[in-house]
Image (cartoon, rainbow, N blue to C red; front, side):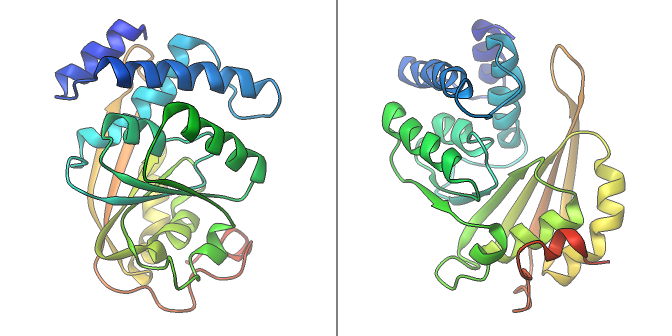
Length: 238
């Protein structure tokens, strides 16, 4: 995906990027490649691939969910900032909190925030399990996002406790989303969520499958979730 194609495909979706926003994406790409030499942030470093598989792919959540409203988003296990930083660049009014368990990645994100001059972006070094039990953050976010972090039964336990009642959990998945949903339905329900929509589409050019799962938080999550670090993965809710 060339930068011109990136601009034009977002324009088709009603997202018009200013010269400043385009410069932010350019700086983001340069920093990603530069820091990737020192630490493992991404296996994708070609400019056209980064614009397609990281930037465009992250923003694709906004094709199916309205990010134009004032929202506080929590991104769980964002790694190098995906999907929340590209979404934040495209919708600068959003408030974003990223929680990640690796301090080195948090350090990269803090430097990125400074270089891109992003406001209302907060980074927290923590495991999602302990973060979800912290009263300061639990059930406070309008939207919780996660992109390819874990299978749905596990991911729901890490994310749904953070969404406020009436809020949303948006999971971004590649293929196999249907199978994951089938095995994760019970967990979603126990944790207070209800699957509202599944949007499937093909990523342009390479035609790989993408799925955006939109889950509404209908009731409070029982206090015992999320369980201790490692437990959701070792013994997923069945």
